[in-house]
Every structure is written in structure tokens, then in C-alpha cells.
Length: 467
Image 1 (cartoon, rainbow, N blue to C red):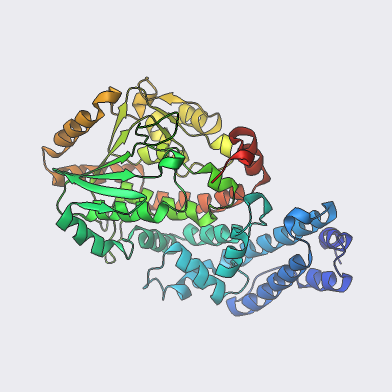
Image 2: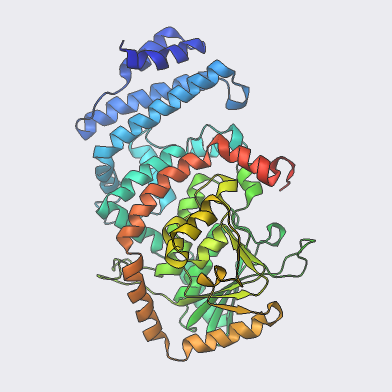
């Protein structure tokens, strides 16, 4: 046994794991890659042994120091070998899962299909569901392997572009709802509501108990609403705004949104895939539109269906809601509103803000916002770098109508053409794909970091929050 393999083996034996099983695990550790078929067997055998050894340890909350060290060794070596396996084989796996990119699969469908194609590479649905029953601090982070897989897929230009294309297609539920909205001019999805007012379709986000924060109960409804708003043939422009909330401090006041639901995050009710589905789904659609199956949405060789988007910011846009502003064509904000990206307090990456915010504010202010939680008053020199117009809080309704009229008076065709022309030089689909690859891996590790729990307890009083 080499010195490099002795250290993890010693950690495993120190935790009381059977010496023979540990020795077999150590000898099974793959040292190199070869052809796909043999690697699938060799690496799969190692992942299976790792999983069996991990199962013999107590659950995470009950582990002693030696058992924690053993679990860390098993998990870190398994993840390292998955990276080694995926480097030469991710493109082939994606081709097998999508019929050589002839079939579109959304992220969750793709990953659970991959768990069957290559056992041990990514967690099964049952494994993810089992961890979902526990608070975030008590999870081993099986979903990190989903992030590693997606990082490798997105790093390949053809596969990554195809996956981004898949996530820009309308959700299956959206088609029938487009016709329903066109007929009625109203659609209530629960966590999102659509209303037609003249030339504009208004999308209201609804989660008042949590200051219109986003979580696993809102995501699919928001994406469907964005699909319908974009595809609706009876309107020329879309407006996003938050509803009034019942919170004691803000009772009866509209709020654009408080970002991710930190209470749900702490309690383990935000799955890792939530981040990727959000940013490759509805947030990307705000920027690039809704794709069609036969046209690559890269702005040069193809196009989708899109509208201009207006954000009406009441009270504040925190975290993910601030991120959404960076995809908007026009931002109207109340004079008393503010923006923040409190990623440091949360311990996560603020979506695609690291890519987009420097275009608006410059690098220094963007870094201060992300790394040092700098607060930007909308009605300030820095806030106006993101906000196009400031209106008195009591006059937001009239201001929205005026902005809608101003942006639609010259017709929708030229507006969309100019939108695409701006975008092709700012954020090509290829640049989006490469950022998404980095984001998938880094956010996976952040999501299961002990620092995230410590940050939420220190900055959010998470232990005492209730669902």
C-alpha cells in the first residue's frame, strides 16, 4: 500500500470499519481511466464499496470525530474519482442519455436517467429523497455529485449548449395555459399570478409569508408564469412585481422579493438542483426568451420567442430578486427601495450576479455587493446604475403604466431586435454555458458547506425560525 493511500485507509480503520473491507476499498481505488465500458465497471465498483462503507457509519449527527474523518475520506475520494471518470466520459454519457443530442431532457430528468445508466455516478431519486428528510446540517451532500456531473456536461460546448437549450424550452404544462390566458386575460398559479392590462402582461410573485422569497414551492410556478408571459400573443411587454405582504413590519406593502427562503434553506428544504433549475430556467428565460426545439437560442444561428421585461421594485430586491434585475430591460424602482446581494452572509454564490453585475456597476461595486454585502439604495448614484427610473413609492402604479406606454410606442419588433443586439455582445450563450459549468460545481460545495449553516445561524437566527 502506498503512502498516499495509507492515510485514508488509516482514517477508515480508526473509525472501526472492518480492516478487510477497507483494504479491498483501497485496492479498488481507480488510478487511471481507459475505455468507457471498463471504466464504468471499475469506477462503479469503487463507488459501490464506498457507499457500503459509508452506510456502516452512524448518520452524520451521531458520528464521533473518528467517524466524521472516515466519512469525509470516503466522500472526498469518491468525488475525486467521479471527476476523473467524467473528464473523458461526460460527453459520451450525455450522448447516450439524449440520443446524441436528439432528445431534450431537463436537469432533473437527465440526472436521474444518468443514475440508472452509470450506477454510482450520481445519486438516485431515492437517495436524494432520503437526504431531503433531514435538516441541511445533517446531510452528507449526495447532491454534490449532481453538481460535478453538470459541471462536466456544461464544460463541453455541444453538450452544454444542448442542455441550456433544453432548459429554455417551455415547460410541458405551459402550452395549454398560454391558450387559457389568451382567452381569459387572467391566470392564477398559486405562487404566481398573471393579469393582462392593456399591452402588458403583469406577473405578480406570491409568497407573502416569507416576503415573497423564492423556494421549492414557488419555482415551477414562476417558470410557468414566465413561459406564459413570454409566449402570450395578446400582449407586447411583461412586468414583474411582488404582491403586498402581511408581515407586521411591511403589512399591506408590496415587496419585490427577499431572495431565497433562508428558513427553508436552513431546514434542508431547498434541494441543490433548485439553484440550477432556477438560473438555467426562468431567470435565463427573462434574459434570452423561450426557445423552440428547432432553433438553437444562441442569437446568431437561431432565436426563440421573447418580450421586453420591466421590473417594478417596491421596498427591496434582495439576493435572487436583485439577480433578476440584471436580466431586465427596464428597472423602475420606488424611491424608498434598496438592493442587496447578501451572499457572504448566506455562504452561497448569488446565481449569475458575478457574471452580470459588473456590466452595470463595474467590478469594484459588484465585488463589494457580493463579498461585503454592500447595500445599494435605488435612489442613489450607485443604485441608478441598475435602476433606470425612480418613482415616489405612492406613484408606482402610474409610473408602470407610463413606462409600458413608452417602451411599446415604437412597436415590439424593433425592441426585440435591439434586445438581441445588446445581448450578443454582452452574454453569448457560450459565455453563459461556461459560467454555468463553474457555478454548478462551486454552488454544490457551497450548498453543503458547514460554513453555510454557521452563517445562517449567526446572521439569520436560523435555529429559531419557523416554517
